[in-house]
Amino acid sequence: MCLNLKIAIDGPAGSGKTTTAKLLAKALGLMHVDTGAMYRAVALKILKEGVDAHDEASVRRLLGHTKICQEVSNDEVKTYLDGEDVSEEIRAQEVDRVVSTISAYPFVREKMVEIQRQLAQKGGVVIEGRDIGTVVLPDADLKVFMKATPEERARRRFKELLSRGADADFREVLQEIKMRDEIDSTRSHSPLKVPDDAYIIDTTNLSIEEQVDLILKEVRRRFCR
Ligand code: DC
Image (cartoon, rainbow, N blue to C red; front, side, top):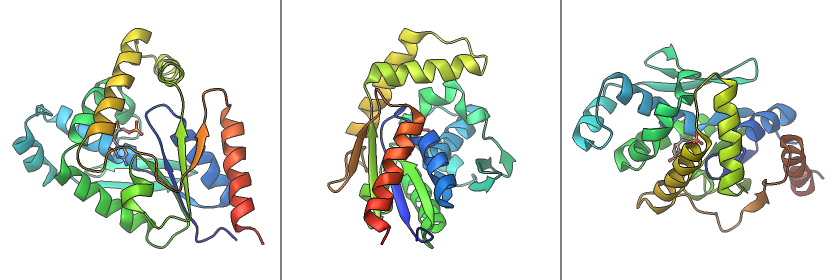
């Protein structure tokens, strides 16, 4: 029943999109597409090349020589930058700090959206990001919007950074989350906003299992005969 569904999940940093999308895709036998990882890969390239994220002309030049692609292997999304698997590297805090700046550039968004639409065109996807239900796939079968308080989202991100051995400071992580919210939701090109017809979930007090379960129930309610 779900083979051709297009499920869009949007929400701010730390709202639980990536883990939820991964488990949902697995439960429904769909492909998971993580669009945030694509913007992160561009940010990583900029860091590797020593380009200033605010130097728009240099970012544009670099993007012309950048290849991003995504594949699913053993239920895990793998993100490739110029042929190299960067799925781990793109989660670093240095990437968090520049990714919102580069993802506000329209020329970056146009290139990423083209890749994302190609991946989603046949359907059978759970695709997550900031502008999926509003811009990338306005015709998605189900649009989910996940939200949570900034403090809870920072707590999750802080835990994730510690678990990967990073030397993180909670107040700094909270400040960065708030800064990313501000840039992502006020940029002029496809800002983060709730799609009109979204199914909204507040995940502040929910476990991952509860989040996935709510969406699965909604999928069954809408698409099972
Ligand atoms: O979901 P994430 O935290 O991995 O996303 C990283 C950044 O990428 C986020 O701060 C904004 C940007 N992004 C975007 O602009 N549009 C998307 N569809 C996905 C992510």
